[in-house]
Length: 495
Image (cartoon, rainbow, N blue to C red; front, side, top):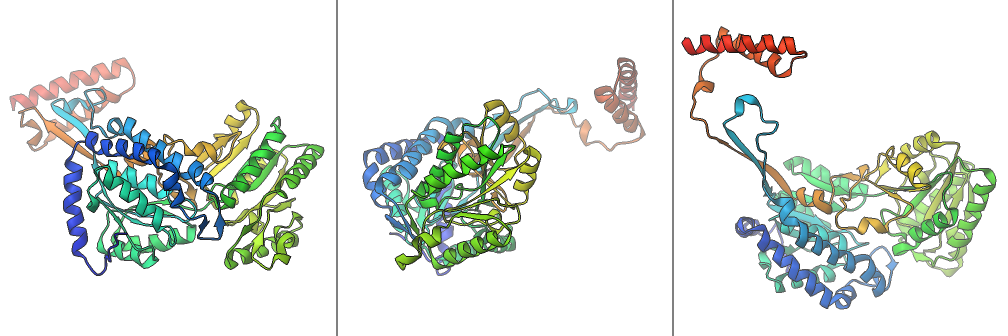
């Protein structure tokens, strides 16, 4: 694997910038062709690429090659196809035309181009080491940037495999550098002057990186933690909602920022709420246990103690069920009768834990949801009309109706959070545009020098009358303003 010690070789970035400028000057269609080749290359070796992702991921997560194919490789292929199909149109310069142009700028032709950022540092996550950083990397490259990719510790192999494929497809190797996975490497790259940082990680990691970025005023996209909510509205299919929540907790061992952590039963009759909780508890007990790092195990233990102290019921204790194994292995923990102030309703954690709160109506549910600082995604289960109306009130980055997690793999959809869940987006047209900055180009075709002349008293009358002519209320007032404009213009010309 190619690595570079940024702190030890400051000239390296200068060389990267030279290559990046040549890449940025190439037509978007040429950059897209590399992604088209990559799509076919990944498709022909999908299983082999999936096998480069460790089955034992950092954070004590185990998963199969089939899981990796479904959750990482296939979505990455679709992301390449999205770029192949739509990138040229998204990045194309837009000529603004005459519509909406100020009257006094009639001789100006204006257009907005999308210019690459330069060198983008992608800081990868351990839970989806191929898909998340991979999509961010290919989008940055198609936008005309060079990329420094710092994989999470233990995930260097899939990053190297994807880089190898890109080079086989025609990418200049100097456009994509793999950094050592240690955290000091990212800090070194930032200190030497990258142009943008994309971080996928915890809120605490985001704060640490932002502190360093503040020194150089380097912009960033922060895709951070979640403590995501599920709302079950009156009229919802309770069986479907329970199956979906169970899937969300099981998916990727619950090592997913979008995994459900809070469920709000909105205006649900007591008997239905009891039935839903019992059904969910039974399904969750069947989920395979996961191995947690000691630090996460301690937080989970604190959550359970806090829930009991606040009067909640620990319906299923994932720690007690596996305590005899001698490992930090847990099943799902389910807490009911939750309150918004509980630790489990306020904390981002990669562990299979779920809290259920009953609310009288949508107003109480929204207020309880707002008590958490995280706002990545939310899921709403209920009749479409009611669910859409409720979704419009949720201050989250993404809302899914009658589903969880899976639809966000659509490469057309921008993904990002609010609050402690971060800012900016990746993926979709918006994510591609975020890898660029707008550059306006304006051409003056008029040869008149009138605008450069000093303004006097006559201009005061002209400009005031022009404002009322263009934006005043009523035909009579605007007609009067037109006459004043013409009169002032004649005086200025005769002077």
